[in-house]
Length: 468
Image (spheres, helix red, strand yellow):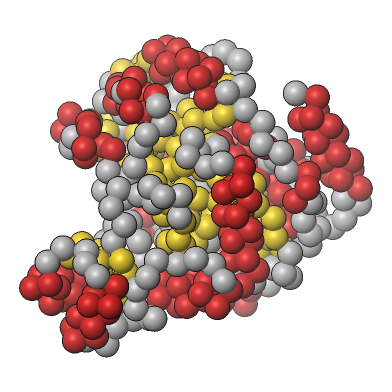
């Protein structure tokens, strides 16, 4: 702990030196729920005024109450409110906000929104539109990583022109392969091909799904890695060629490519492997001329070999566990970078202390294939105790709307080691009482009691193989 204290003192000294640097007077948060509150808290600590935006369905939400100002931007559906770029820009201009923080989801990874902010003289707290475009195109991102010396999974050089090219690539790298959409994410436009005669149909299906979901039917082919871990590296970069990493997060517990539980550090990553993956992630951020907080995602196979999967050009839902083990406020640092203060932390100041796990508390019924369960929260009793954090916008009497993501909150638990973290997590989950809507809390309790999870022996197939 003395080492952690010394590192914290160095960071405090660095922040003190930056107090005289320019900072925004007012930031608009183009989001809702717990991430909007998270950004408001960071702004409050920096002495920055905040403007919240809300749909008619969210008029009574806590982020509206906590913001210094709030502007209604439209009806409940996101397509008529949180996704309407002109309405958000107008709210920023009318309120005098100098910058916009997009949070995650909604407009966070929309290059056109970043570009629109630039055109209107508003600072987008995040990467430039060019960086978002580059990393949003999976095939272009893959080519950029190859040029930067970042390991990638064997596959096509870029998007494939036709089925014949897909068949050629599959012969070269061997089956099984994945056909993947170049645009978008969330598991859409992906097909696993195990037999050669199924490849043509998989290409056509992936192209059609990608076109329908993203308006872009381009696909590429890469080697399929069976039962990998999903391990990502948190990066901070200033857009001028300087970047650092904050270690890794293991996000292997997921369903249909959607994460449910994350932990830091990963039980499968040694200090040596952490250094290698961190260096690769920094090269990726520099190659993309990245600015702000972002995440480089890798697949880790059973032999300890890692390969680039994608870069998320925004703050991640699970950024909290990296904060828990490093003591670095990622959201606040991203705002400082956007304000022109540069990177306030050096790589040699980053130290990993203890272990942290995040549980996504969703309004979903795990017994009904995780179907969303909107409705009235009649009881909400969150857990407490040492190093237990809850990022949420929910309270007793909150009406969970059917219009948005089902996330109610994020339970983050820290321990001096993984064993203590798991023991503390069991207590926290047992003491978390929610009534009125079904949640993922009981499911999380099942996961962390499973012998394989306790042993740290998991993959992205864990839920399907053991809890399906």
